[in-house]
Amino acid sequence: MFRQFLKPALQSASVIALGLVLVSCGPGRTQIDPDAIAMEERAIEARAFLNDAESQIAAKSHITAQAYWDQATNITDETSAAAAAEGAEFTRLLVSLANASKQFDIKELPPAEARKIQILRSGITLPAPSRDGAAEELADITTKLDATYSTGKFMFQGREIDLLEASRIIQQSRNPADLQAVWEGWHSIAAPMAPDYTRMVEIANEGARELGYPSLDQMWLSNYDMQPAQMEAEVQRLWTQVEPLYKELHCYARGRLNTYYGDAVQPATGPIRADLLGNMWAQQWSGVYDILKTDTPGPTYDLSARLNEKGYTPLQMVQTAEAFFTSLGLQELPETFWERSMITKPEGREVVCHASAWDLDDYEDVRIKMCTQVNAEDFNTVHHELGHNYYQLAYRNQDHLYKNGAHDGFHEAIGDFVALSITPEYLEQIGLITPDEKPGADTDTALLLQTALDKIAFLPFALSVDSWRWGVLSGETAPENYNQSWTDLRLQNQGIIPPAPRPADAFDPGAKYHIPGNTPYLRYFLSFIMQFQFHKAACEQAGWEGPLHRCSIYGNKEVGRRFEEMMEAGMSQPWPDTLEKFTGTREMDGSAIIEYFAP
Image 1 (cartoon, rainbow, N blue to C red):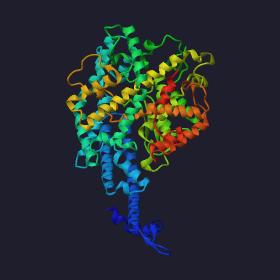
Image 2: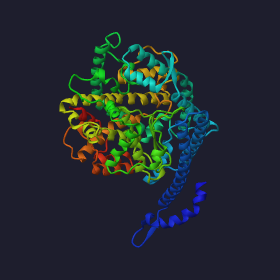
Image 3: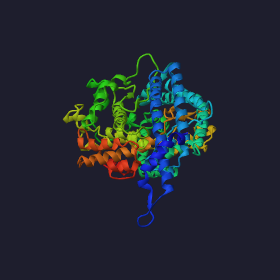
């Protein structure tokens, strides 16, 4: 089809290309290289195919994104059905184009065209096979899983509660029986997902095989400018760098919990009970800082309390985050951001409260979706989510297939890198604390512990999520072993166990949004490594000479200029090129984390 359409163009283009394909045949003689002409013609065909593909994807993605936004901000049977229908159509289009791209041999194309073809083939998160009905079935399942999670509720002390209230109890309660009941209650909402999840894996793996991959996990791991096995080895190398720091934190936290609860609840040796760490998934532990805090002095202020004392609203928190980015010289967010974002949970309707950033038109219709609370955690989260939006705005002039992060870890790292500058110095600059309240050097251990409870505690959790999923997608983990594999990996990587033995039908992975929501999770592990790399590089650019955890780049426009240059590249070049542009190194590296926490 494409050859017939392009024949006239090829004839004229071949003449233009002669300068590239002439070879010398001795003095005064030249000869046309037919192989070079053929390669040039294939390159022209590929460019025409890709231009058409990008136009189709762009047009359809805008419609699909709106349908998913409508469903995420107002979960009804109608919006779920509309999202499923649009999702099915979009998946069919992507699979069709990816299959059509097989006519081109990447090894025979110029680098730009080869890169786009690779992105087109491997960039579908859940590919449906091209057989009739597969895309519709896959879309129905994924929409149902998302809605089941987002509307999940369970009974606690005679009343029905949702995840927001359950998370507050997990963070605030110090009653082990209540913590266990809430933990088990939330995880019970996931059990009905297991059959649908199993079927979804079957369909998506069938789609991955049709695109030339042995299984979906290998397709996901093909998105990092290296072979899947190399990427797995890279992840293990990074974890080896930072694992000793996690083991120290785990040992310290277990001792404090044992002192607080006693041997009957939390033994002094062995794993930690997952419900005691202040977070539903034990992925970050700052919720129990009151138990884990050090004996050394700490800040005299509580950021959550201070935000409320100052009368901050959710809107004002987002405005404050925007002001950080504009202080670096970046543009203000479009007016439509403020008109169209969901910043707080609307009354009277079900929504997906899990915080996320959206780009609905691949140009400037950027938004966030949050059920924002006025507290320190969401103050950090709004900086993180706006990082996504500013990245989207930075690469908006790239070709459509390049409108993404250098790899998915970059996208997650951007906002968290900025949030590392939420230091006492920054809080003083924006008037949240007074100069007299700024903690001195004697509080460094306490400040670093607060950060470690979020950043270091998270690393093995992030590793566990996709380690579990790779086993599931590869077929190594059978459906009847889904839950045991999850429990085993969390014990192995995190040293965490459930508060009590789990029922036979448990599907605990489904109690974490990114499993039913089908969001690859390796990106978060990589981002927690890279954000410290970015932070160290930015502080060096700013001429900072103190400890890294005290450095804030707020207001530094030179750092902002280099930062924006890095983001503008999008996915247009291999990620080591983009990383090198900002950090001076071509390798992801955990040493910046070690340096950050050295004090």
